[in-house]
Length: 326
Ligand code: AMP
Ligand code: MN
Ligand code: MN
Image 1 (cartoon, protein in one colour):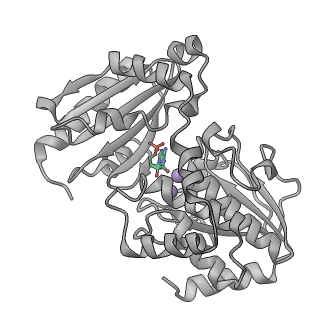
Image 2: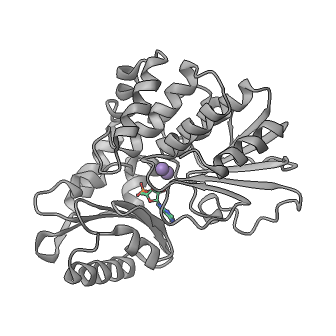
């Protein structure tokens, strides 16, 4: 999609001398890869770039070129342009109460169907498999040379949000872009290895516990996995190691909806939701104040674990009973 908004965003970035890039909490390959890919491209254009994420970078993304540039402190002062990648709203960056300088220009680059259009310029493409696809288009528009470092980041962004090009968000355009990125000389086999094939032992331990606590509900259509705070503590696993475990629930034969309930503390439960063929998990996540896509979404419930489980099961069962939603 190269439309008026895209040109407008590129034009603003061309004019700017300093840009701050922001990516969401509990970071994933798309938000980090998109931020780094764009950050390196803007640096190549001679911009001063600040890249922010409040949380630790997951271990399997620590190989990404430029990752050491990501800051956990907010820029002070805020530069003229504040650009958000892969964020549905400012809450996803924990900046909903931040007062930005009156002259800041907020740019919003995202592919979530539930995006809140919180920017002055909102480039939202819910057909894009990953924000990385949109960043790719922006970089092309900015006429920046696609270096191996930039391409490695964008390839990782797309690779992770499409589950290795297998989720239904994958399009022929996704493959075309991946092809262009491969042509820049990236070592894609090495990227796959770094991202997927170095499972830390702690993650396997988490999976062991998650499987022990797996509940199969709604006549086998709904699989809910739970991880307590003490599971993470006893194993010595950081929260990001829970990423991907939900697929062990989702891929069970007969399952349409899967959930992973992660107890952050006694009154904060982070919920990941996935569906396979027809159930709209964004509808469930949005109902609880979160968001995402039809096949992958999330929300945070501020209540004890058991209460959260009860509420979620009730809502999912209610929606399953209504039948096909998308
Ligand atoms: P996750 O289960 O954390 O991998 O998230 C699945 C998808 O839902 C990703 O595209 C997230 O960006 C999105 N998502 C997760 N949590 C939230 C939330 N609280 N608000 C909006 N989108 C979310
Ligand atoms: Mn994301
Ligand atoms: Mn994404």
